[in-house]
Length: 333
Image (cartoon, rainbow, N blue to C red):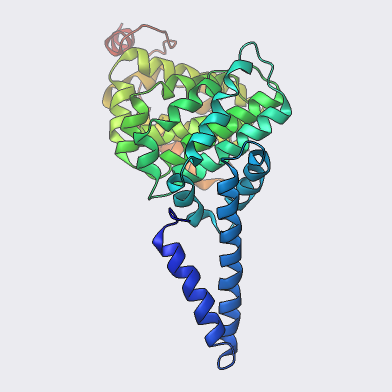
């Protein structure tokens, strides 16, 4: 392919010539050459599948097969191929926007959900790759996923759609890049994640909370959340509700992300002052002792959080619209 990265073409040529020429003299080289040739054949197959994406009649099968490949050894090579191949990203976007009409009223079928999620899996591959990540952002690609995150139906097709969309955003925030965080904060990602944290499945809640956690761990993200009381209380209220629900249906993985979010919020002095009065009581007692027994990291985070917010004084409930100064005044009265 004309758009195939040069490194892929060179690697393919090296495998083809190097493997054959050294096979008789060096058995190890022969094995390496055979493996290289096998990868070369798989890459050629991937190239054809990428071409098939531009053909509406072949696209469904290509999406399925490529979504399998992106989970395997060709993952690193696939993203540049997808991004640089003519018409490929447009084909993936066509798959995404074609689903918009069935979002409301919610009539998404399992078949439709599976197909668009295969397209989203390829976008996650692009979002994860160092060579294509920023191109992905500059093209405003995450915005095409937001209608999926804005859905409220709890049916399996919709849940799968939200979870896969969150996976794309999660792939972006994993890299700890302030530019990525700044881009996401310029969009509505925080309220969309909070919505999922309130009504999604356990797995969707976990991924959405992880995204909020990664945003908070960046100084830009922490400042953004703590700049206004409204933003802090929006996040704090959802985290608190999740903690209360986990008392009935524990999830150590989800609880760990929630604790890390609280701990990071306590790094901001005004947020820490507010947390002294609104941190859920069940994080202060032994409610989650058994849940955290096998996770020393989460226990250490919780201990540090409680140390950060330890203070004597009356407790006041978390209230929307109340400012940080109001919270402090309530403690002094």
